[in-house]
Image 1 (cartoon, rainbow, N blue to C red):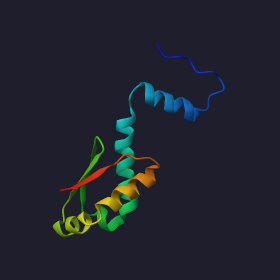
Image 2: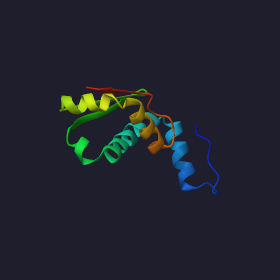
Image 3: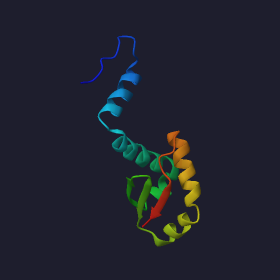
Image 4: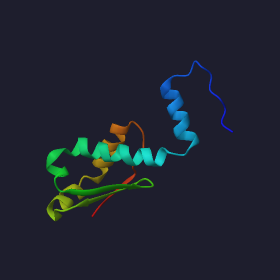
Length: 98
């Protein structure tokens, strides 16, 4: 049974508790990482991005351009840093470009 929160709790605190109790954080991270990828990479990269999937702490990105894939592979550590800064916590530790 879930402990009842007092009436002085903020909506944010209640939502965090619901996410924690129902183990919804991995799904929330998946959505947050997709949004971060779209906002950080811009229209140029997004037009060649087919799919973005977070499995554990590894981000899998499917690209339709081999040239772009090669270009981005040189900056994997920077991509990890940028996404984690955008999310304000360490979610991604590795990027795999396909």
